[in-house]
Length: 133
Image (cartoon, rainbow, N blue to C red; front, side):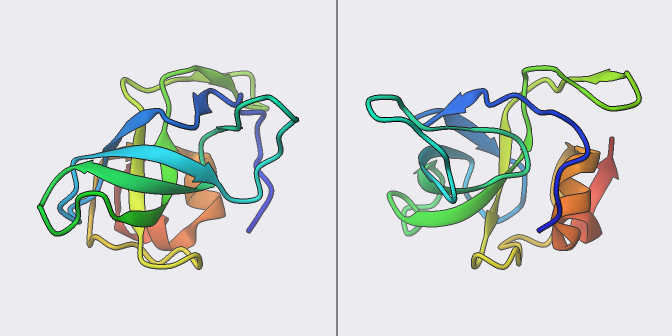
């Protein structure tokens, strides 16, 4: 996994609900854990874009509901600043479900744009993305 090219703020806490941006069948997920997450005693873990997280499906097919999957956050509402000076933000918070920790996506296409930081860090997701911003 490559380092990120910009300083993205940690804005999504454990328990936050996200839209699913791929065609895996799930529509909404909730963050249950953060892989390699840093935290302090008594403080809730938070995550940011392009990080690997553990999610449970909240809306979708009956066989997928309440199951745990790995996911990557591809969009976040909170704006962040790139090294070039431009500021980027999206309309919603969205994630893409994965088959395993290696970054293999569960779906075959991603709906909507994904961030350039995500595409650099997760090349499998960049292949199936419709647009990269």
